[in-house]
Length: 162
Image (tube, rainbow, N blue to C red; front, side, top):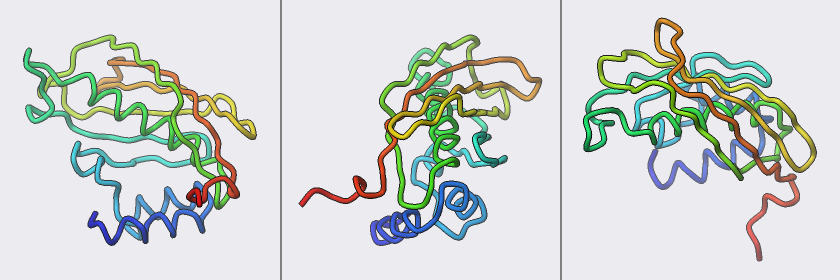
């Protein structure tokens, strides 16, 4: 995403409800966030309260000890859970992650193959939302699981401070 397309995408985001925005990202009407391009993951399933991202970790994601960095798993989990929250929001509303808890269950390497990060909403209130996530491999084996707490920001609060 270029610097000039980012403000345009954000303006489009404010005009759409959360589910409409996620669908626009998935079908290319809105450019993908740079993090998805950088780490090579994309949405594969979208429904209200549930979002799935898929990706394929490789050696570019390795840490110095020869496995995929935990930040890769944490990023996919943060993304799917936050987007599950976003899918429930009305136009003009947004969120930010306040807390992220990740449990790493199994090492991830380039040999792991495709991974699937599924986020599901647990609670949506006027000021706070919680969600859970699971990262699995192609065989359905659990690689990591997580929870998040997000601050829900009302349409009137999403403006830049003057």
